[in-house]
Image (cartoon, rainbow, N blue to C red; front, side, top):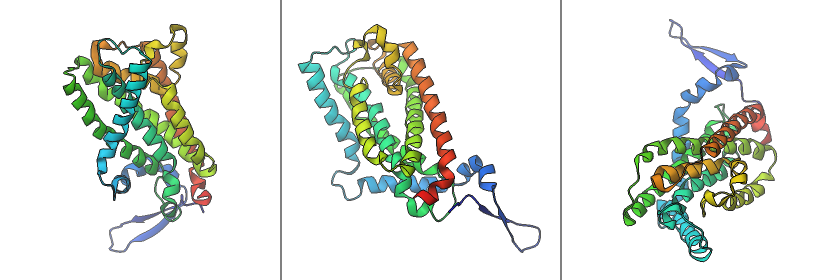
Amino acid sequence: MNTDTQIVRHEPRDPEYELIIEPGRAELYYWRDLWRYRELFQVLAWRDISVRYKQTIIGAAWAIIRPFLTMVVFTIVFGSLAKLPSEGAAPYALMVFAGMLPWSFFATAVADASNSLIGNANLISKVYFPRLIVPVAAVMVAFVDFLIGFAILIALMVWYQFVPGWQIFLLPLFAAIAFAASLGIGVWITALNVKYRDFRYVIPFIVQLGLYVSPVGFSSTIIPDGWRFLYSLNPMVGVIDGFRWALLGGESKLYLPGILLSVGVTAFFLWLGIRQFRKMEKGFADLI
């Protein structure tokens, strides 16, 4: 079932309405339709936020508890037992949480976006709208969790009496890079998951593996200099390093070549994800 044919109502001077069916119009005005369907985007995002914490005892506090407990475990294992160094004089727990925050956003966004189309199968198979709205709404829900988790980061900085420097004003830039990385990879995997349902089993494994190969529980400065640039092929390396630099100021060193490489990889995945999504979008209604 190809649902790309869109029905358009034109209102001439007389009170009658003329109904015109324009095949191909959906393709021609696709990006403009993203804005026209913004109310649907808001409905989907708000519905997902409500469902996530519906009938839970502590509600949105889960967005704080999960990264906080992970931070505690990583601080004990890597900081106390393995004796890995922090970045400058910053407390190890603060360094870990500064890395955990963007990683939790990325992992949640990719996991939620990958199943978003399948979860909205009834809607997709019946009416036309730009399908890109669905995974983007899922990423926005993860971003709400990110904002909630940011509250505990502020509390930690107050607890440790740690005052950030001027770099804090560049934090939105690295948040935007994290959003782009989540959206690009999430949209790509979303399209693949519709056609190849095996990805529903692969995605949790990839996300779990990524937690340990990304510098979340440790500083990327422990990576040998000869390998650090190659290590930055992981787009989250540059994002996490950027977050720590923006939050910890002079206590964290910014590896600029790695940041630029991570930005380049993020841009590539964003282009690839949207390209593959648009290429496969016409067949979603049939596959789902």
